[in-house]
Every structure is written in C-alpha cells, then in structure tokens.
View (tube, rainbow, N blue to C red):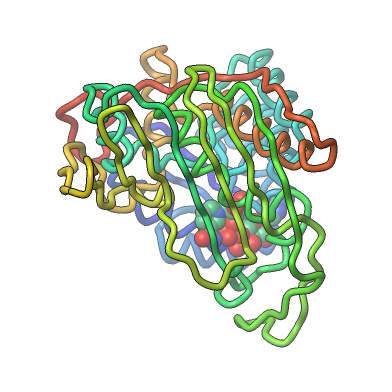
Length: 362
Ligand SMILES: NC(=O)c1ccc[n+]([C@@H]2O[C@H](COP(=O)([O-])OP(=O)(O)OC[C@H]3O[C@@H](n4cnc5c(N)ncnc54)[C@H](O)[C@@H]3O)[C@@H](O)[C@H]2O)c1
C-alpha cells in the first residue's frame, strides 16, 4: 500500500506521541515537521528521521498529502485554513477550532476544495470504547438510558511545560478534555440534541510549579469548572462535569446505565482500560475484544487516510469534532443565559469492524 505522506505543523509537547506511533499505523508516514520555533522542528527531525522545514515550505511541498496540525488551540483554525488553501487534507489536535464559526468555516472550505478534515480525539477507536459500544449494541445492559461522566482534576500547572494556554480562550477543562468525553459519548449513543450548563472559576490566577515557568502565574480567563446535562437524540440523558478545580474525588470517568445493568467504562483519554459490568451488587470484568489497547494516537489519521483512498467516510471526522465544539460552547452559553441550548449538528461514527490487528482500520 502506498503511504500517505504527512507533514506536521507544531512540534511541541504532544508531537512525539504522533511521531513515535505513526510508523505502526498502516498507510501513513510522517515525512516533515515545521514549528514557528524552528529548533523544535530540527529536534523532531533528528529524533524521528523526518525533514525540518518552514511552515511555508511544508504547505508548498507537493509530496505532502495531509497537514497534521499539532499547534496550540488558538492556532488551530488558521493552520487548518492554510492547509486547505494549499489543497491538502487536514487533521488536527482537539479542539477543531476555538470559535464555532471558525469550525463551520473550516468544514465549508474543505468541502469547496474537495479535501478531508479530521480531528482528534481518536481514543474512541481504541479497544476500550469499541468494546463498550459493541457490548451496548449487543444488549449487555438492556436498553441504555443514561450516563454520568466526570473529568475532575487540579489543572495542568504542576506538569505541563507551557500551562498558560490551558487557562485562555479555547481551553479550560471543557475545551481541553471535553472532546474525549463528548466524542466517546456520541460514539456510544449518537448526537447530542440539547445542553444545559453551569460554570464557575475557583481561582483568578494559577501558580505554576512545572519547569521552565515555575514561580510564574497564569491568569485564568475561562471557567475552570464546567458541568452540564446532555440530552441525546436517542433519548439517552446524562451529566458531564469537567474541572480543573478538584483536588481529590472518587467518581468514575464514565458510567453508562441501562434497563438490565451498568457499565463502568475506561478513561476516554486512553485507548484500552478496564470495563466492568454491574448487575445488582455484583461487578464483573468485561474483557477487551478489539485491537489498539495501548496508546494508538494517530489511528484516526490512519482511518482518514484509508477513507480518502477508498472513498468511505472517516470516523474521527471534522463533522464529529464540530459537533463536540458546538456542545462545549453550548455548555458555556447556557450557563450565562440560564436556558438550555439546542444543538444543530450531529453525526455518529461507525464502529470499527471485528477482527482487526493494531493499526488496521479496514
Ligand atoms: N500535551 C498533551 O499532553 C496533549 C495531549 C492531547 C492533546 N493535546 C493537544 O495538542 C495540541 C498541542 O498541545 P501541546 O501540549 O503539544 O502544546 P505545545 O505548546 O507544547 O506545542 C505546540 C507547538 O506548536 C507550535 N506552534 C504554535 N503556533 C504555530 C504556528 N502558527 N506555526 C508553527 N508552529 C506553531 C509552538 O511553537 C509549539 O511548539 C493542543 O491542541 C492540545 O490540546 C496535547
């Protein structure tokens, strides 16, 4: 199979995860990297055997089929637009864009240019959530009716080398971590129809303790506790809470409830994980039955490449990421207006077929 050639823009913290794992994904090959801090591209080139280029060189390189956008969130839309204008397919880290209008514009531009848009997260393609979906569709918990979902943390200033952007527009706990949860839930239950949200902010400034910015403060410009009620088109309802203001808790990542039982689901920011089935007081393990149990970041990109080749839809799609973006904005807007917000977009990605090996998508 001819490899689809990938050029990375943004060689920061998350980029090694893609560069390490992509060689194990069928049909894609990262060939070049660019960063506005050029030494970072050079570092990636030396470590992973790719070419270090400027952003303009990457966009003008006819060998490159797909721009992989790993910049920080406020840069996402601009890089996506530039990639599409260069007639390249684009795939990016989450969120798709900061503003909803930018997200819509990216999808419209891509349609006009005849190129694909894909977006992380792709963790829902891992063994964990593929097994949960199969279990639900095969009736393990009867009729699914509801869920609870919690991403509760103390923030990122103790570990991330560049924690500032997490407290700026386009980030906060919902925009940073919500995509994993919303995408997993939409994968399980279909699109969200209505959102009611409330938000709060514990601190106006966060003291950074990670290097190299230890001792500086990050001003907090967004809510750092965002909780919402989600009503799905299918009738399933649930609660999603994302927070950077929680020091300790005992709540699950995601639990789903049905007429015959409950499933305790893995962290949707992982590919594998443990699944447990509860009926009454008894909880038993549900074995994982799909591939991609370990970190498989870029499986969504490999799936997009396969979709481009065969003409089929890809799963970690721009439409799915736009839906998540609409839901995240709705949670914040509803907190201000006091009213529920109706969601217009919506798509449910197809399950992966049974019997695939790691890195395979068809
Ligand atoms: N770090 C993680 O653990 C993690 C995990 C999952 C997803 N993500 C997502 O990945 C994205 C990047 O996060 P990160 O942690 O790697 O951030 P980072 O700040 O470490 O890296 C971003 C890189 O992009 C470069 N960049 C920014 N704008 C650019 C532009 N216009 N042209 C060229 N280069 C540009 C920066 O110089 C930097 O090197 C974010 O969307 C984040 O949400 C990060």
